[in-house]
Amino acid sequence: MTISLAQLRRCSAAIDIGAARTRVYVKNQGLVVDEPTVAAINTRSGALLAVGAQAEVMDGRTPDYIRVVRPVSNGTVVDIDMAQRLLRTLVGDKLRKTWRRRPTMRAAVCLPYGSEPLAQRAAVETLTGLGARRVELVDTLVAAAVGCGLPVEQPEATMIVVCGAGTTQVAVLSLGSIVAAETVPVGGNAIDHAVIQHLRLHHELMLAGQAVRPLQLILSGGDGVTPGSTEVHGRDVISGMARSVHVDTERVRDAITTPLTSILDGIGAVLRRCPPDLVADLGERGIVLAGGSALIPGLEPMIHQATNMPVHTADHPDTCAVMGLGAMIEGKVQPLHLDPMDP
Ligand SMILES: Nc1ncnc2c1ncn2[C@@H]1O[C@H](COP(=O)(O)OP(=O)(O)OP(=O)(O)O)[C@@H](O)[C@H]1O
Ligand SMILES: [Mg+2]
Picture 1 (cartoon, rainbow, N blue to C red):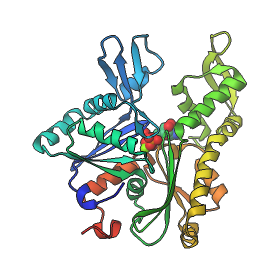
Picture 2 (picture 1 turned 90 degrees about the horizontal axis):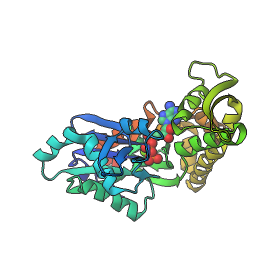
Picture 3 (picture 1 turned 135 degrees about the vertical axis):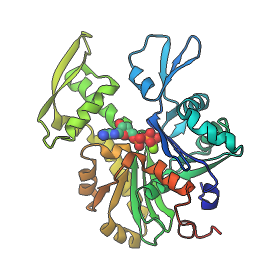
């Protein structure tokens, strides 16, 4: 993937289709879509019943003939047709006008670092099916670093960790390019899964996917205090009856350490590959966390403890990537700095 800022400035939309959420930034309009990447379809007629937040609440509550699907997995569009229908419905009128006025619509899409050619192709096909004549692919890491306001174009190292739902990407950037990077196939989904498994194994309780979030909020001690135990409602594994149990929050914290350790391994691997001069810079500047899963309780202190470096979470970690890509298509990023080869 290459960045040509001149080409990016010709794009009219910046799109981030993530495993959890789809975000669309339209030039001169800003962020117009931020919805879950979920669609509900009627399997009998093939009709699309709902998309985004409306479809997400249906998950796990539908009759047989309604299926709730997620067309993106681990940063790759796995169901191009469904992703197109989803985007078409979500973006709807907001983009149609822009696209009608400019028949040679160009779009910029961000993809995880090290995406396979097939994944790149799937993203391009999704957008060309929607009417884009040309699709620019940008590394999520670079887009997120710009979105966090990091001075990527300077000859000093900056480290960014983008914690998404399906993947976690780690990079050291200097002079607008990636010096060392790694994509770990572990993210918010794996952490939710670890919580569900813990409740199943230790409390014989089956928990719906959507019930994990309140538990995470309690873990983070939203109101300043983390209670020692919290009540969780679910279904008994053996009897199938509704049941509620008191869960020890400390033990849930332990349960999520396994996926969190994979993220630390990724950070370690990138630091080992990074030239020593840049690692010295990082010791002062620290690590910036972006992506929705950066909000997971305990992630920031855990990374700080493991690396001994200052760790900051970006202001709006979940929208960093699309806002950074948006800044690039608006021409707010200085070309000379970000890409020295750009005329
Ligand atoms: N407040 C929060 N606390 C804990 N986790 C959160 C919070 N907000 C979002 N998340 C998690 O962040 C993830 C979504 O992050 P994000 O929107 O960056 O994903 P994505 O870009 O769709 O995924 P990917 O980049 O992996 O394709 C979800 O797994 C969600 O559980
Ligand atoms: Mg993402």
